[in-house]
Image 1 (cartoon, rainbow, N blue to C red):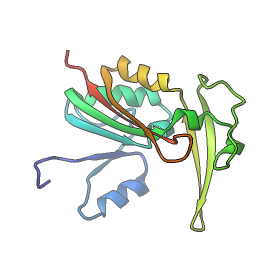
Image 2: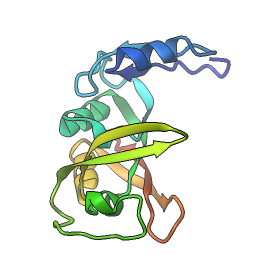
Image 3: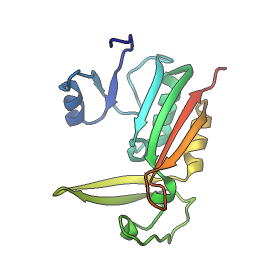
Image 4: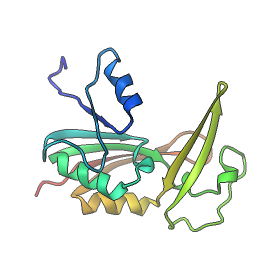
Length: 168
């Protein structure tokens, strides 16, 4: 706010929306589906999708909405589990083993169980090959302008990208 930016979140979870609203500083959050955002066309300079696009059921609808709300020249910054990592067999996740029994190019749901500091979480996500992300962005007027792979270890677990809304 001090820099003149207006920030608004969009979340489908009432719990997460309430947490953001009660933070300091508070972040206004619209309770909505990413595939049907209650925002006007071309109203955003920046959209951030951090570890969310792989968990959204209507991926194509969400990417279409991002393209709709971004102004020409606007940017999308996204991070997802690296598609190479999400393609592995579920029973080898978080182990030194690494096995693929299904084709990398085949989109599919997967379940990832994570336990840390006595807390257990289960994520149901979608594996998409890199081309799935690139094609969806291009179909909605966005072009990747930066790409980073990382996360440590021999195989990257993180894919981060910046996509620019093409001026037409």
